[in-house]
Structure formats: C-alpha cells, structure tokens
Amino acid sequence: MFTVRIKPKSDESLISFVTRFASENGTKMLSIWHDNSRNKAINPQKADAHLLEQAPEALLMLNNLAEATQVSKNRLIAMTFYHVLQKFYYHSETSRSRILKGMIRNDFHFCPFCIKEQAHIKLLWKLDGVNFCMKHQVPLSRSCSQCGNIVKLKDIEYIELCPYCNTELKNTQMMIRKFSAKELKEQSLLQTIWSQLLCHSPNYMSPSEVATKLVYLLNEESSFFERNTIQRNADILKICLPHVLQIARDALLRKRTVHISTLLDVMVYSNIDYEYFEKISIPYGFRESIRTSKRDNVKNTGCMSPWCASYQKSDFLVKTGTKAKRYSDGRYLRKYVACTVCGSRFAYNIDGNMVELDGFFKGYNDLTNMFKKKGQLTLQECRRPADFKRDRWWSVIAYFSTRPIFGEVEKLDEDLLLAFVQSVEQNGNMNNIHKWSCWNSYRHFLLYRYHPRVMNAIVFSKRKVPLRHDIKDYENKIESLCRSMLENDQDISVERICSLVNISSTTIRKWGVHIYIKNMKKEQGEKRLVARKEEIIEKVDQFFKQNEKCRVLSKDIYNFIGMSQSYMKSIAPDLNQYISMKRQNCSIQRRSTLEKLKVKSNAFQR
Image 1: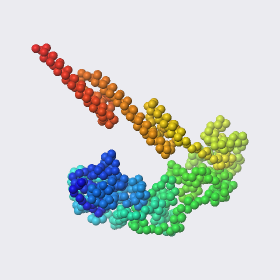
Image 2: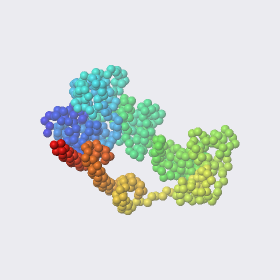
Image 3: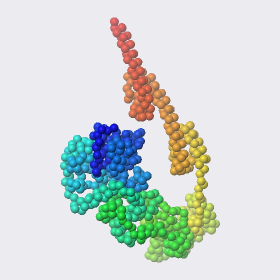
Image 4: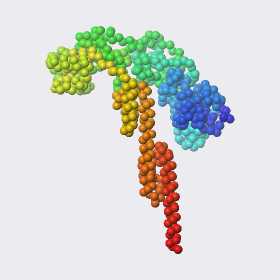
C-alpha cells in the first residue's frame, strides 16, 4: 500500500499523474505500471508509455490502479484520449483505432509559467498542433534553455527538471515569436475543440456520418451538392475528397474512418467547435445527393461506344461478375459491365460515372482524328500516340480491324475462329490459347482475340466455381506434411505449408490448423536446439582437449564455437555454465601441473 496520496490536476495526463504519484511514494512509474498491468509477463518500457493514454483499459487493470491511488476509474480514464476514440470508434475496438495516428507527440512541449505554478504535464500539450498557452499568452517550449536538448517525454523522471542537466524547467527562457491575431484565434478554437473531444459523451458517431458532415461543411452548409465548392475548399485544406466521399458513402471494402486531423482542419476552417459539429443536421436532399453513385442502374444505362449499334440504348449491358476492384494507381471501380454487341467493358468510379476500361473509346477518337487529317489510311499505317502503351495500341488496332468502322474488315479463318470461340466457352485460359502453334504473330492472335464473336463469348462465359475444400482431408494432409518435414529437418511454417497444399494462409487460419503447424514448428525448434547443444558440447570438449596445457580465455572458446556469449545465454544458458565449469577444471589442472613442475625444479636444483 502507498502511504502518500495526491490529487490529479484538472487537465493532467495519466502518465504525468502516475509519474508524480510514484515520485511521492519513492518508487518508479514503470513499477506501478507493471504492478497494475494486464500482462505481467511483459516488462513495461518507457518508450511504450504513450500507449497507456490511448488504450488504458487494454493495458492496465484500472480498478486496481484506482484502488492503489484512491482516484476513481472514471477520473483515470478522463486523463487519457479514451473519450476521443469512443466518440468515433466502436467501444470494443478502441484499442485498435488509428484515428490519432501521428497526433501524439514524443517531445515534451510545456509552458514554463504553468510548470512554475503546478509541475505537471497537461494532456493538451501532447497533441500535435497545440503550440500556445492561452492562459499565459506564450508559445510552448520544447527544449531546455540550459543544455539546449529537446526534452523527450520518455526520458522524464521528475516533471519539473530537465532529464539531461537537472535544470529547473520553470526557468526556461521563452522562444521569441509573435503569433498573429488569426493564429491566436485558431489556437483558441483548436484547444476548445480538443477540450470538448476529451470530455465524456455517450453519443457515438459512425465514420460515414462524420464524413457526411465534413462534406456538408466543405459545401458551406448548402442543401444542394456543389461539387466545385466542395473541391475548392478541400484543395485549400489539402484533403483527399474522393477518400472522404468513399467513407461517407460507406463504399470501402475495408472499413475506414476519417483521421482526426481532417476533422480538426475542417472545423477550424469553418470556425465551429465540436458541440456545433455534433448538432449539425444534414438535409435529406444533400445526404441523398452524396449517395447517388450507389443508385446507378445497369438496366437503364446504355453502351458508351459511339460506333456500337446499341449506343445509348438500354438492356444491352450485362454484369461481368466483378463487383469492385482497387488499382495500384489509387482508382476504385465497381459494378463492372460489358456490352453484348460491341464487347466493350465499363465500370463505375467513385463519383458514379461510367468509365471505359480497355481504351477503345480513346483509341476510336485518336483514329478518327488521324483519318480526318491524313485522309486515305489503313489501320496498320496509323502511328501509335505517345500516351498509348504499345500492347494497348495493338489491341485497339486489332479490335477495329475486325469491325467495318475504318475500312474493310480483315478476313479470318472460320475454323480457327470457331475453335477460339469454343475454347472460350469451355473456360479456356487465354494464355494457353495464345500458346497455340497456329499463330503467325502476336498481331495474328489479337485479331481473333478481339473478334466480336470471341468477345461476345467472353462476356457470356461463366467462371468455374472452385470446389469447396474438404477440411478433414486437408487436415490429414497437413499433419502428414508436418511430420514428414519434422523428420527430414525441413523448415515448418504456415507459408510453406500453404504453398505445398495450395491453400491460402487465411483459409488455414480460419480452419484453426495454424495452431497445429505452430506447435509442430515449436517441436522442430526444440529438436534442433537439442542437436545444436550436442554439437556445441562436442566443439567445447574438442577445444579443451586441444588446449589442455594452455591458458584458456572465454573469448577464445566462443570464437572457436562461432557464437557470442550473449547469444549462447539466450538460447542455452546451461551451456555457459558448462563452459565455465570446463574452464575452472582446466585452470585447476593447469595450476596443479605448474606446481608439480615447480617442485621438481626445486628438487633438481638442490
């Protein structure tokens, strides 16, 4: 039990309070953390102390800490960022939230006047962007004026002292910098918003609702969705508008939330606090205008290809089966469709607009311009535009070579065309078809690949549904593999097993078989360690046999073994004891031999 009790300050952080409490009771903050930790097997580190203020319930037994400090659990939680996470994340998942990523400082920012009045660390000082003490109207310092070092939060033992030179931080000379009236107003509003966010509130706001309100504010609270206005304000604040719109529409495959920095930027820019933000009521029309992209209807949409016979006519587009896809360049497309007449493929972007996927639309426009400028041309004579990749351009030329748009249609072998169509209908792989020996060139293959009949067959071909795995058979197979790998001393891992049985690691973990693999890997490690020990003992014995008459140093032994003493201690501490015992015996034997030689020498001299 602790004999000294202290009261937390109204704006104090949890780490500051525990540090002061430990100092008053003659102990360390890490000791109190360890005594109240949920996982006693892990030794707390100062570098991880910031986690206590982001996920206190995940790391600490708060009821025990409350009893030890005589401070209520709710008061302890109020000294953390828990209430901020609670407002925007599900209660059971607050410890995994990344909404505050990059917002918590590692350096100690402080006001010397506040330290002089009450030596404690304010929770607000830890937040990136809070740079001014509104009480004393001075900018926050971050370094000791005596030694010049930037003070790290993890190095602080006594809040009032510099951890590097023991100078009192209250005597720190202030940095001379004048804040403009606009900056002071923004700092005041920012700190007001943070104070409201840090307070307890039962109201939870979903990521979709937060994003919708942000877009509404960027729209300057107008009931009509004005894309230009929203984009202009987003550009000023350097906000990725497509990402925010995806969250507002709840269109992301993996759930995301708006980062707190985006929320703060918009509120400060709009000159509102969080209480106002929380009470914003979104007009129904505006809410629906954001979600219009979810209401696009394939049945009422026509083909976009101007050369197609079904151009802008409904009922000619069919779904390809691909629902959504994210590309490496950041594009996100969904609801993939294809035209049953011309074979062109389309998809909807995040704005709800239909885009063409294969480049035929752009190719058509480029070819049209070429034919207008140069008159009589053949498709083969048309030069590739600079913004077209070579393979894509060849595909465009092959596509239009089989359609009567830019001249005569190239004649193809009907038997070969029929074989191509039949192979596609039987779910033949396009790479395998490309390897047929009948093709004279890659262009020859493309002429058939983009023929209307082949493309139509591709549109209506159904992918094979993979057979469901028999879990029991695969479990037996995996167990047999693990035993075989253990006997043959082959590395056992989930990734290696997955490649051998042709199943993803996600499936193996879903079945729970990864636990068996983990146990077998552990058994293999223990088996290898026993063999390694025997090998090391053999080398140690060999070394002492070769050097039984010499003085033996530890470094010579470990150099001979090819292993450092610290590593040996980590894998087999008993072998270190064995080496020490062998050295001791060797030393005793060597001294005994020297004494015998000395006695003989003295007897001989007499």
